[in-house]
Length: 385
Image: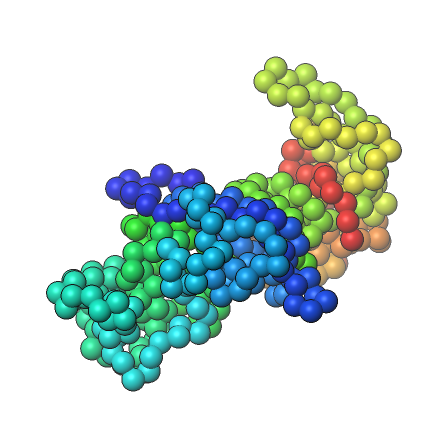
């Protein structure tokens, strides 16, 4: 978890044990086990219908699981209604009162509690300052931009000092540029207040950008929990590899395993037989056996592309010849689809870091060489369709 100078972690640990939920015959969640740490920015990531919003609603108290437990700081919260849990929710559609000012929208939860007027004044202005809306206190929601409305919703959700803030796809209604800006602001707010954030999204870039850890979900199950780096670089399943960013993914059979002479770690050089590519070398610290069916993944940005064959190649470099089937220039990068052995299209991404980068000079139908190190590929431990 990130250590932020000046931030005091005052959130709650959230523990989910054996939680299942079905609507009729449809199993939305199946035996979910999860531990979210105090002060963590934790994301539930997955496609529509995977169960992430239902899980968030169970944590919030809007849904009841068919079985399982939900605890905040080891205290059972399932018997408690949403308004008595130390959590609050920011919804996708803002849920603001259109007839009330920004000030009154934020003050509403405290007015329900019949809080003292001076306390309300102090807390509302404190939270509006946090979300940088002090100058908009007397405006109505229809006078605000989408990003400003979302910040009002966040300020209102924080007014009661929750220990857990639940965010249900809060940025999905915003355009791409505003979404990126709000994501940075949301991360800064988290760093300032230091409580637990649980963030639901289907956007893998959002999750990777701000999360301390991510849980990738599909079909009501959690497939992998890890840091953004672990999720991206070491996917646990084919689904995770495909869902997180772009990748090249192949079925493979292990044909040879050689233990490397490294003093600090037990590492192996593995030869893979991949029908679409031929022989591929990859290093791994995991245990496999010769003849085992696995999956192999290599990210497009880790593959080098050139019109000239490298003068020398090391034993741990995988080198293939192919032709450019499609180049797609995007300014900061070019994506190439390279036809190898007339069997497969390998995706390659070349970043343009210099003004005179020669990326665009590689054209359609050009013969090229692509290469990647054995250290840059990854054997997916769980092979599934």
